[in-house]
Length: 221
Length: 391
Image (tube, rainbow over all chains, first blue to last red; front, side, top):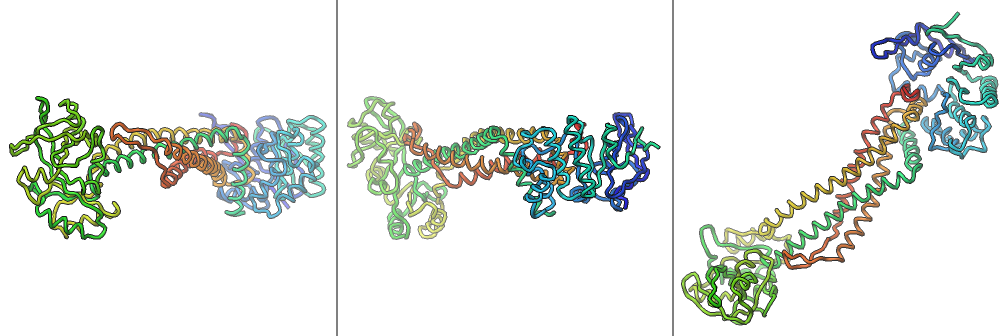
């Protein structure tokens, strides 16, 4: 079953008087349980595509279906609720809440969705990402790799159908990068977690089930 | 996912965010606390001062209700029957008629125009304290004695114990012994007042059963309005003033001073509000990426707005409570340190009133929360893409 289906997706930004076509008619899809890498040079529209699929932004034209639901027609409130329940994000800069401990960061989306046992579930997730002993540490007390693990645990907290990740290892060294990628593979294999990962790194792309190449705002090939 | 979880999450985050930087938190609380305490102490001082001033003025120169002659008449007629009725009225504790007249006082070749305040010392003592305001000599005991104001004494070079000749408005004159010199704090009496026995003045002016004013003291001054109508009806008089009207001038002056102090308070409050607003605003700008992430995760703009509004509310609650405590202690301390007011020649002090706490809490709290409103709105409206990627 298709979890992502985009039809002739376009996104145009205006930079002063100049219009920039970040996406120029992208038609693509991803199946449930797939691990897809999106690759391409800088400015090819990878992150823009991820933002649109993640409902963080609205396309200039085209259609996006997530799990068969037309997301373009949703109002802002519905989009926010949909993101909370169905999409997890992992970004390059971790973006943890610095005033919350690791476990509180993971609890946070569950608190928003009214999950009754958020602390227990957060502890479980931290155990899955191998950080159960650091759960009461603040992000400033964690290494980059540990922070990204917390970000992954947070992204998984509401059991999202879709995990979107943008250059998740760009700020990490080779050893930690390998560990994070292993974590993604495990989540994909063992829990059938659908993962869409934007990356520059061909080695990381090879670890995905499939690679979609972007160039000049279009899907290549 | 509902209102309850939204509020719970907003509260959780706001609490964590405000408690992270304890130094900034303490600074904001201090700013709000001082602004709140400032309101309580200054108003306590002003209210204490104005109430003392009003009390002293009333004690010296007015009854709770004062009866005046009818329009276009100089005297109240039928004083005897009116006094009889007053003495039988419920809640009327005392009354004192006075007769005002004018004349010239001569001492050692110097002469000054004076205002004669004729009264019955026995009755006057039950209504006002004017006869106790003697700075030299003693009080009236005999009809051939007068009290003169300190200004008359200065102008004529007179002392207690001396003899002065008073020429009345009908041309008759008589020499009196200056029994004492007064300083009352009431402007016209201090300027030119000669206090003497009413019976003596009546005799010399050939008057009987007349008064310029009857000052009535009732069991509580809050009954004054009620007694205005009762007295009009029972004593068949038309012009009756209550104590508040008698001190309109003082109330007006105090209101003017209060406006000035309110301005000072407003500036202090504005400074506290700005500091809270700026700190929350800077926090919002500094955490733009984090706010973007909150929205990306699925936190509604309204919940983010609530987070920062709650932060302002935390500051307001703790700051105002601290300010209330500080203001209470400050005002109570000042209550124990009265100072001498040269205008009314009395010790006056700040006074703590419970309503000051309510007023200060409401005003400070509202201003601080309002100050947090703008940065909270900005936080709630943050664009996710721009915030996360810093564009």
